[in-house]
Length: 127
Image 1 (cartoon, rainbow, N blue to C red):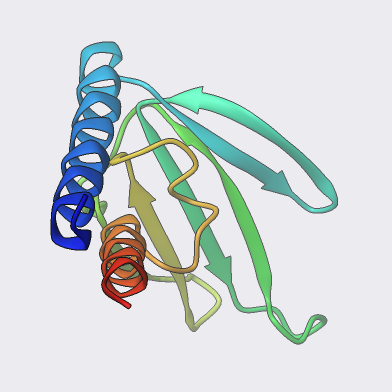
Image 2: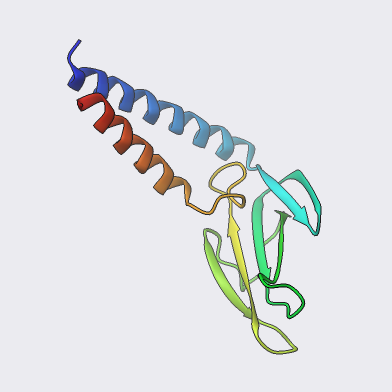
């Protein structure tokens, strides 16, 4: 089988699996999220995942909280990170997502990961 045909079949399979996963999540309306508050790490299920970064003078990287939300307020843009002013000055960074399970645990976005994976596989098959 030529490497072009293998690459085509592999990309078709990856697309099918991604579509099936996306469809499953849309049907349930819920995503699984990483839940992290302080040293406690677990998982939860909700309509949205969030990751919040609040500056803190006592820690070098500030305070990071992750978890689930079932409602979004007017300041929240799903799929984006927004800065929210704090009463004591400064601002917190709030990221809200719902495109896939555990979307709040990744530094790299899902679409970037998929594109990099497909590109790497295509190069490997062509070499």
